[in-house]
Image (cartoon, rainbow, N blue to C red):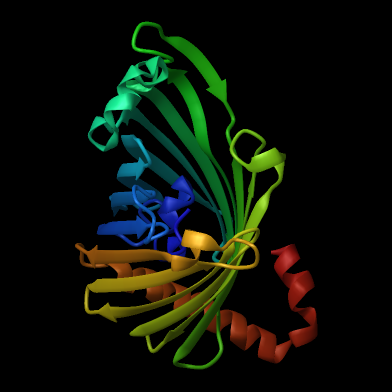
Length: 306
């Protein structure tokens, strides 16, 4: 899971596809920098909203971890239902295929006699993901099922259908404008699922993002059962650049303490793009702030009623 997922919510939830207009983004994550053959992840996304209340997305990903590598592609369709001016519900469905293979170039001669490696090479699967997001002004509540495996090739000789719920990801974010130039957005992300997490125990991330004058942003993240991360980024016209450094805490020492590096590069290709998304977010936050200044004690019941 990227520490910079807040810069591209489509990475977490397919319902967020196309929200920023026509945009392209490249994300790179190098985990445990001092460890040989440590996990590396590259993701490219292309999004657009060709019609009102519709979003489309394309995701290409590549990951290397130890002696194994994975590549895949997914396409996404998202749709938004507006209840009123402030509330909306978005749905997204992704469908794609991926392949897992063995990195024979990093193996030694003695490893070639292991028959398990040959059974694990060139395996492919068809997978899907589903997500939903409820938005009420600056509040967003989301749930995602990112690993709905439809079909999996078990070995190079046999295939089988395979239904796997995988994990469930729940998110909550709230954006509010502290002043005319400062936007603050706390967020929580929880991951649950016995098939993907040790001992079936869930994990969560808690983060805080602050943006100044739509130009510079900084963030901090705490990752349960692992560590923390700090991030910094800039908006340069239609281009956005972000960097995050993640490090282990507590008993997770050794080579993992050398940290994880992430880099994100995003380009708004359309006329609306990222500026429109940020402008709409500012307007929602400003409306919420004005309403709270008029009736601060009534805001929670009002949000629930709306």
